[in-house]
Image (cartoon, rainbow, N blue to C red; front, side, top):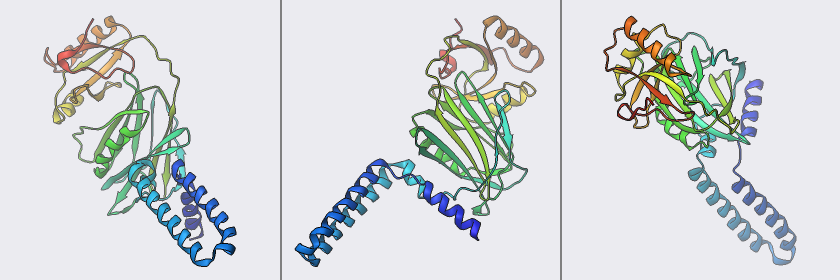
Length: 315
């Protein structure tokens, strides 16, 4: 019980107060102290009236702040307090993972919070309508062209937090966030695409189960070297992306991405030269059951969102 109280106190202390609200609060306190000095001359009834008006004004500002500042509002909702740190993920070739095997989980809430110069994405887990204590087995992969963080969470049967992905786009670092098709009904996947270079840290917590991604702006300069992507044609969200991935099973760099028109495609890999991409394209066509009009090579610049099929550029 003592440890739970300490964690609750810590979580309460870490709730960020928006600058505007903090400023008005300080001003109200200062006015209250000044009025206290005047109270002796002005009388008790006048003091009570003034304090009542100040409290009412502060309450109105507090209500407005909750409704207009999503990061602040999210910290006051059903987000569980911070649990015990399990690990800080160590990335190898852009990939890392954690958690344990479990099942029937709901990824019930994803929030975005501002923490000074950084931003935090908090992924929460629920089971049987209660906060889960241990994180599901999960993987995180970071790749470029465009800069994308891909999440794969096993043993998850529901994704109630899918609606929260749209809120992540309120971040100054995030361009898009969207679910990725999976043919496995116990596997939830989603991507976060960044609009610039970022530095990131991913931590796993227990009691309650959370994955927290801390983001800060990375170097402003970007490579001017384009890449050549071997990819499928675009199509609306659906099983077709899962089928393409199954055909490409065994290739390490396979990923599903969203294009600039809101459709989806599967990328086998990307290369620094068109010659390398053409060699891979030929190998895939010979080894896998792809028709000639399904795969092509797309030339892509850094941070560029992939083009839809009709607008691909192979120059």
